[in-house]
Image 1 (tube, rainbow, N blue to C red):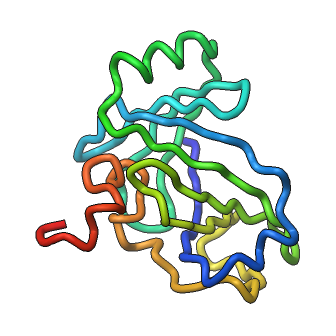
Image 2: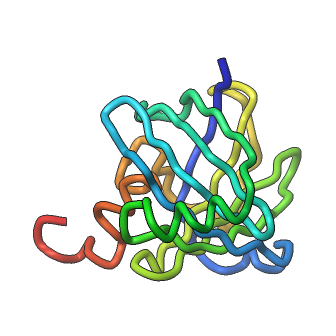
Amino acid sequence: MATEIERKFLVRDDSWRAEADAGIVMRQGYLIGAEKASVRVRVSGEHAYLNIKSATLGVQRQEYEYEIPLSDAEEILDTLCQRPLIEKTRYHVRHGRHTWEIDVFEGDNAGLVVAEIELGAEDEPFERPPWLGEEVSHDKRYYNVCLVKHPYKEWGQAGA
């Protein structure tokens, strides 16, 4: 079984940008976001992937990912995926022994910036960079599959 152990945090400020790579633009959409799992298609630069992830809340989930032809992914995003699509730029920042992924969202989720770290174990220690804010690993609103149904731009509105 493929397992992902990932912790997710808000970002306090833009100081991470001084250590970041150039970033890669991503578009992703969900074919299904159900009770047990989500199925998404992601275009990341010149590569594309089909991803299946368990809908478990928390830092450890099952995850399976397969590279697919870019043209297939573009067609799936344009014709089969739920709207809105997730649009973001992902940056990588090395801090201590780990590489952080910083997602800067655009479109309906503009204004949201989230840092993620993948770990080998749930209790693996890691250095907290000074720009790291509140942990949101257990808050489903920050899961990409939930940002399709309840985009960040709507969070300030009643019922969001």
